Image 1 (cartoon, helix red, strand yellow):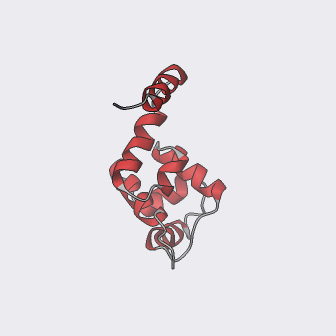
Image 2 (spheres, helix red, strand yellow):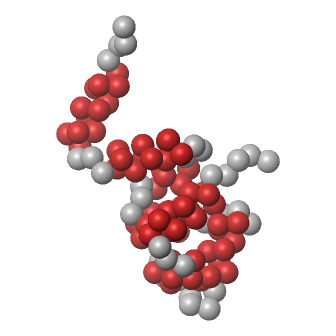
Image 3 (tube, helix red, strand yellow):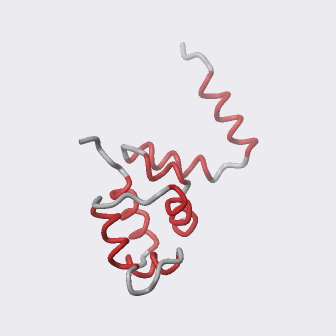
Length: 102
C-alpha cells in the first residue's frame, strides 16, 4: 500500500489553526451531525477527501493545496512558504534555484 500523506498533513494543519475536527468540517460546509466523523475518517486515512474537498480544507486552513501531498515535513514547509510569495518573488526563486552550482 502506497504512503498517503493527506491524513498527517490534514491533522497537522488543523491542529496548528487550533480547531476541532467537527469545527473544520462545519466550516467547509459539512452537515453538523456528520462533520466530526467524516473529518476523523480523513485524518485516520480511512477515506480520502476528493480534490474539491481538499481545496476547501486548504482554503480554510490557509495552506496551499499541494501541502496535503508533501511526503516530508521540509517539502510541506516549503510549499507553505512558496505559496506566500508574490509572482515576482516566485520567479526570482525559480531563477535562483536554476543557477548552476559550482
